Amino acid sequence: MTQFLIENIAPLMFAALVIVLLLGYPVAFSLAAVGIGFGALGIHLGLLEPSLAQALPQRIWGIMSNDTLLAIPFFTFMGLILERSGMAEDLLDTIGQLFGPIRGGLAYAVIFVGALLGATTGVVAASVISMGLISLPIMLRYGYDRRFACGVIAASGTLAQIIPPSLVLIVMADQLGRSVGDMYAGAFLPAALLVVLYVAFAAGVAVLKPDWAPAMPGDAVMLRESAERSGLRSLLVLVALSTLVSVGLMHAELPADTPMDEKIVILVLSITTLSFLGAWLCRLAWPGLLSRLAERAIFVLVPPLVLIFLVLGTIFLGVATPTEGGAMGAVGALIMATSRKRLSWTLLKQAMDVTGKLSTFVLFILVGARVFSLTFYAVEGHLWVENLLLGLPGAQTGFLIVVNILIFLLAFFLDFFELAFIVIPLLVPAAESLGIDLIWFGVLIAVNLQASFLHPPFGFSLFFLRSVAPDRDYVDKISGKPTAKVTLGQIYWGAIPFILIQILMVAVLVVFPEIVMVYKSGESTVDPDTVQIELPTLQRIGPMGGLGGS
Image 1 (tube, rainbow, N blue to C red):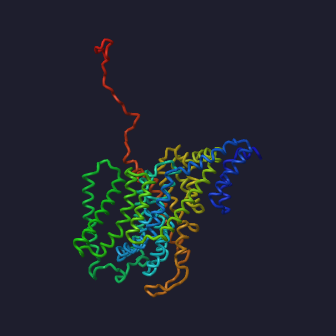
Image 2: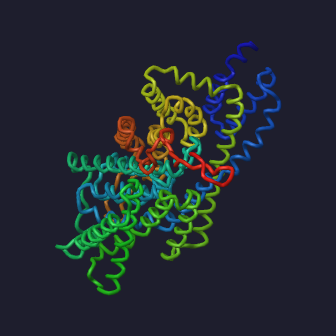
Image 3: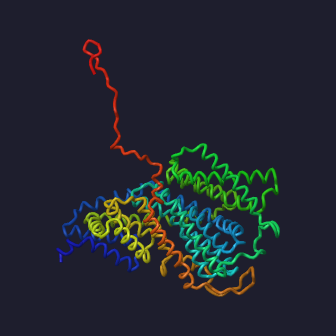
């Protein structure tokens, strides 16, 4: 028995962790308990030295002194201030007015607002609950199919996991040992492409199933100038002029080798800033030149966009670290809430309370993971996992297929943070041995994990939406019509098409890794090993001060 324990302590340790987690014990304490228990067993069996325990305080201190993790409370606080100061409601109302008159317009509005909230809150729960409370009653009021409406809201809320500046990407970068800025740059285009796929699906539903996504009736569009004018013309003219000026300035000022992600950030920041300034000047100098819709869209959409891309821009350009960018974003959120006269002590206290709880939750899981990994690595468990993965057929392709299937299945039962702190560190050595770029690997896993929030029956987004969706028949306050409840089955069925879209996105990233590898576009392509430096021939000075030979 003793020999069996000695030879199989690593797989037994991993199996014990799975059993303890399935029993329902808190993840942080489960990790720490299994690590300490098997550490004591290893010392008893003579596999480990008692001095191993002395390394534990140093490991925990390493977590506490990790500057990168400081970005988590900053970005969380920024998102909570913006979300609880009414930004989500303003965005949904304004974008709903923009797209509402077209078929499927409310679905487009939810997707775009989900992307904006994802880039500001970084927290899936906040995004899903906000949009569920605000947009679901409106979509039901105007006859949207319940499955489609629930799927759009739940899936759009999960965009908070992949769109920078995301808490998920911060944790992923820390676990992979890579730069958060590189992780943000690598995830930028995949996140944008995922939003496009969501919009394409919504457009397909609007065309093929028009009764599932009807347009808002004319009397529901409150910002229409008159029966003939929608107010869009002046908005389009202002944005078009701002775009032309921005493109011209970028072409004149930016070097030709500027990385694509930096160009996108600078372009969007320039367009939004110029649009805001133009709208402000029109309001002061030529009142009535812009429509009410144009003014509302500019003054509601631009400030959060400027804040988002200002934070991302400073990180991408190397001006600020992610921690500094998060601090700047938190201050910007406070300024925005104050300027709208929506900042109160109650709101501030709530935001600080939730930020403290979430940060403590992440920190405790990370401490437990370090206790577990200290013992697991000491018994060479990482080598067991690496050999297991490297022995898979198909080299890189086989490894990626098995890992993505494993992550997809584990996500039915484990949260992202649990997977990030338990599973990801075990995959890194094998990925590096196979020559896989870790930024690409991290973005790939992040997209895969995004589906974990939508998995029936345990997807967290589904539960968040269930908590705010009507669970009994009710009478709509605006229309006065009786409205049926939303069932859990409708929420589950609505999520399935978006899970398939995310699986498709994983496949796209595997086939076209250059979508992520754009983060390397600003790096030097010169191989240092091929560099040759030729020094000029120098003349020696002779012993008497004269010039000697070379």
